[in-house]
Structures are given as structure tokens and as C-alpha cells.
Image 1 (spheres, rainbow, N blue to C red):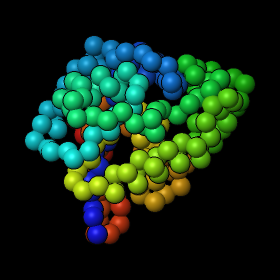
Image 2: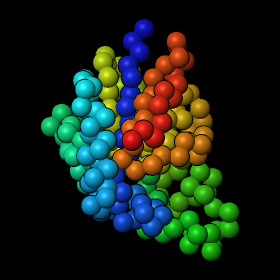
Image 3: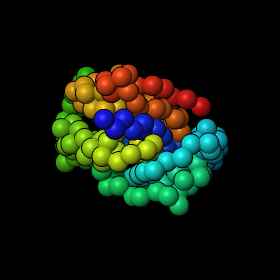
Image 4: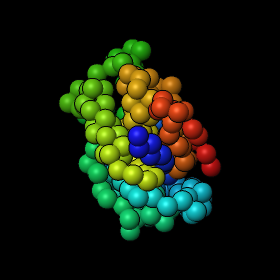
Length: 189
């Protein structure tokens, strides 16, 4: 059985990731701090060969991939777009809770956006693509899609992504404990 390893990298810090605003499809640049983070993550990757490099089409993920030194190998993958927050794009959880008490992305609606099931379907397609190839793979994307992807890699319900807090421009590694998909490393800097 083929047991590829999957490295995941969340994009570096942006103005909205620092402020806690939900950043789905809005294309915003990395902060200078985010660029430094991305370069530092690249140093962690310098001795690893990847047979597959996938990247979200959004600017912040592409720039992180570039600063990490893998943009030339990267294939843009629409399934790695961040969760579409619909009407909640650009809002903080606190602001959303003013009208939707107790709301979280994990259990609440995103009017005119995606459901957790739709995000999970995209994550499942990325996982299938990674597992169908041989060699190490890496994806550059966004906090919520990568947390759902991690839950699905581990054969958990997508809502369990809430348990995998993912910091900007960190390196995490998904792999195997014998035949069981597992998290091998999380939030490395």
C-alpha cells in the first residue's frame, strides 16, 4: 500500500488573520511579518523532495509558497480555496455573534457561503489526489480548509477540524501510524 506523507502549510499572517476577520475568497496580501514567517517555513522544507506541490489560487497562499521556495513546482488547486464565508466575509466571530449568538464556523450557517459538507468534499478530493500519487506531497492553503482536510485525513467528521488550531505559516505533517492515517507533527516553526 502506498503511504505518502502530506505536509501542510497555512499562509503567513495577513491584516485580517491578525484581526480575526474571516478571510475566505478576499485576496489580501501577506503582512511583512507573514513574509518573514513564510521564509522561515521554507527553511524547514529545504531538504525535502516533493513529488506533488499543490497551492490555493489565492494570493496569500501563492506568496507563502513562493517565499518557501516551491512556487515553480506548484500546481494551483481550486479545491484548496478557503471556506467561502458568504455574508460573513470580513467579519469577526464576535461581530457575527451579535446577531447569531453562539455561532462558530463549525456549527453555524454561512449565508450565501459554503456548508461544512461542501468544504469537506473539497478536502476529500485533495486527499484522494495525494494518496493516488507516490512520494511526498505538500499543500499551501488556509486555516479552515486545512483544518477540515486534517480531520478528513484522520478519517474524522469535518467538524473535528475545530480541534486542530493552525497558526500562520507553520508546517504540519500528516502521515501514518502503520495503516492508520495520523497527525505526525503540528504547528512547527
